[in-house]
Length: 497
Ligand code: NAD
Image (cartoon, rainbow, N blue to C red):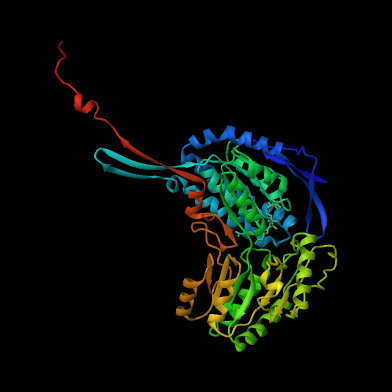
């Protein structure tokens, strides 16, 4: 059995805690590796390496720091197929979807190739008599990132690229469910010329996370995962005086107005609801058709598409959706489907009985559709994080708008309509961080920033875009006045006593 250790100070090291977690191929249900779970002393080694490497890295001029990322982007492209295969084998998503995961990460590495420009400060000549004022953006020192299983390439790169490009050293604690891609990224960064110790990977679970949150040499923490852990990380890291951003779960609604293109809306819902088996923080999990007629037209278009979805392992090039990540995730999703039925929702497509010949032990859940879901039901209130779409019927635009407005989560939302005035009103009034207009998964590009509102994010600055440069740096402002110098007192005649 393959064992996965840590990557510290430019090399692979074995775990010493004696604790391991199993890594599975979700399509077969077979364990494929054991990943080491670090204790505090293993984190200490990573912090020591980071602390030793960071001053010289911060002093490296920004164009040289950027060049590492130019080469890193090249290497990611060169190894795209290998990375995608590695990612799918531990996550379960299709190869094409894994490539999307990698490319969306790589785009942030491309963005930070502009760090010489992005990190520039401000300057005012003559802010007072003989006084100049300027600001610098200096790295925090050592940053740490704690990432979820669902984007094992994208989210680590979203954190490490801006942190490292701005001159920080960085310690990544990836998800213990799919650690191979982050370890490979560490090798590629080293190959790109990143000095040893600037990027370290410490695998682990709560023990490693707690050691990060309490460590007095770690200055900034970025977290992405479920809301209860995001809240905990936010509060604990802040209590230890760290800068922290913590992104949590989601329940993304898509409103379908009576004037929407129903075929387009149904296609969007199938992709956004079931792509990656619903394991995306930007997945649509609630569809809100406005008016009974819209609802029935939408269901007529939607149901056959859901029933014809091709579910399979990533090795099947025709598969549109794979398994979920673990047996525990599968069981949790199945029990939430049971609860929806028990609480009175109408189960239109039941994915509980889905079986795939040859993959009976895989963690598959069939695509599931509920209709007549109401806000009190568990399947509406909770993030299911599986291939389950709920239809909540609304009688008016206002009633539809109230649903995402009042929901605990505020990550993403979408509206499908042909009416610009409705779309504009919606974008203005909704209390959610990322809004799609006739776009079901409105994930902003690398040069904008990514982040939700309400229980979907804690902290002030978003991921990537210029926010990330601000998050991983701090401002120093200098007010300077030079007393008159040589130019005033210079004498040009031969000195005589
Ligand atoms: P998770 O919260 O279980 O784990 C995330 C990270 O926290 C992992 O590295 C894990 O090892 C660590 N962790 C788990 N339990 C912990 C504990 N008790 N104490 C300290 N650390 C702990 O999340 P997941 O299942 O890996 O990922 C799915 C979740 O992530 C979903 O809720 C999804 O919506 C969310 N997510 C959010 C975003 C976003 O940008 N808002 C993006 C992707 C995923």
